[in-house]
Length: 445
Image 1 (cartoon, one colour):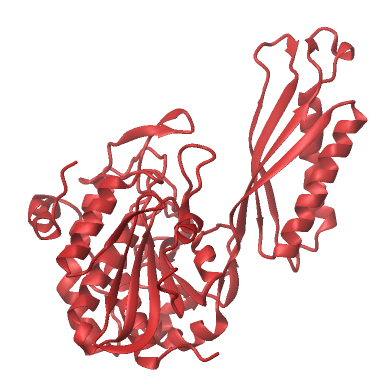
Image 2 (cartoon, one colour):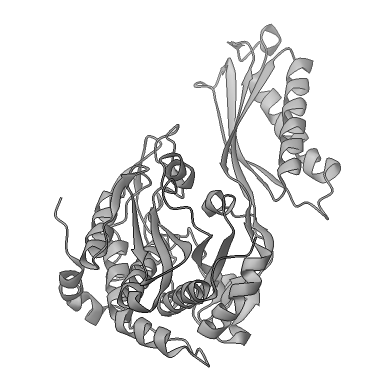
C-alpha cells in the first residue's frame, strides 16, 4: 500500500482542486476568536484537499486501511505518536498542552457506505467492494470523509497552539460507525473501548460532529438530552413445516405466519406505546423465504430495525415484539425466534456540557446560526463514548443556501454532495469548543 504524506497530498490534488467545484467561502462567524480564525484559515485548503482525496478512496467499516494510513502519517508529521490498529483500523493520538489541565477527546468516524455514487463530482468514487455477500459500489454518502478531514485540520491547528494549551486532547479516528460489511464482526466505538483506548486516558468530555443535509450550510444544530435514537438490528426466524404448495394444510406455512407477525407488530407502536412521550419505530427491511413457486418452505426470516429514545421503552417493545411473534406462530403450529443486536444506544447531549460550550459554537457560526434540532430516529454509536463520559454532539449543515432542505439529497443518498463550506465551519466549531473547554478547566463533579 502506498501512502501519500499530507504535505505532498495537497500538491498532488492541485489539478483536482482547480477543476472541481469551488469551495464556498468561510462562514460569517461574527465575533470570531483571533486564535481560532488564524488557525482555521491556515488549514482551510488542506482540509478541502484531504476531504476530496478521502472521498475518491472510500473504504467500508473495519477496512479503512488507506484512510488510517493517511491519518496516521498526518499525526506523525505533527509530532504526535499515533496508536494504530485499534478496532481494527482505528487511529488514536494524544496532544499534550504546555500546562496541566483537563482532558478532552475528539472523535471522527472514517467508514463509507455500500452506495454507488451518482454525484458526477470530479473526485467521485468508482470503488467497488462486497457487502454482506453482495457486490456493491462504495461511497462516502454520509459525509465521514468530511469528518476525518475536519479532525485532521483541528489536530494540525491545535498542534500549532500547543504552547498555549492547558491539558490534553485525544484525537479518535473511529472505524465502522456504519457497521461492518460482514455480519457478526464487532465494530465501532464499542470495539475501540473494549480494546482499551481509554485505559490510560479517561477524558473529562468527548466531542463529535456530523455533517447534515437537513440544515443549511453555515448552520449548527444542537439539542440537550436524547436527540438521536438507539438502533437495534433484529432478526425474526419463523419455523413451520415444508409441504407442497398445492396442499398447504399438509404443512405449516411460515410465510403466512411472518406476514401476520409483521402486521401484528405494528399494533405495538400504534396501540401499546405512548408515542406522544416515547417515539418508536419498528421496521422490517428484509423478508426471505422459499426457493420455488409451488413449495411452502420450512422457514421465513425477517430482518429489521428498532429505534427508541429510552432504554426501558426499548426493552418493553422488544418483549412485546417477541410475545406477539411467538403467539402468532403458536396459533398456526409454528415457532418464532427473535434475536436482537444492539448497534448503538440513544445519543444524548450532556445538558451541562452543552450549556457550557454552546457559546463556543455560537462564536464559530454566529448566534443566529446555532439552532435547536428535533429528535431524529437516526442513530450514532458516538453514544457509546458519551455514555462513559459527558458528551456533546452537534450537526453542521451542508445544504447550500437557497436550496430547499426537503428536496436536498439526504445523507446516505448516492447524490449526496455537501457544500464544502461545512469543512471550515466544522474546523472552527470543534476548535473553538476544544480551546474553550481546556481554558475553562475540567467539569465540576
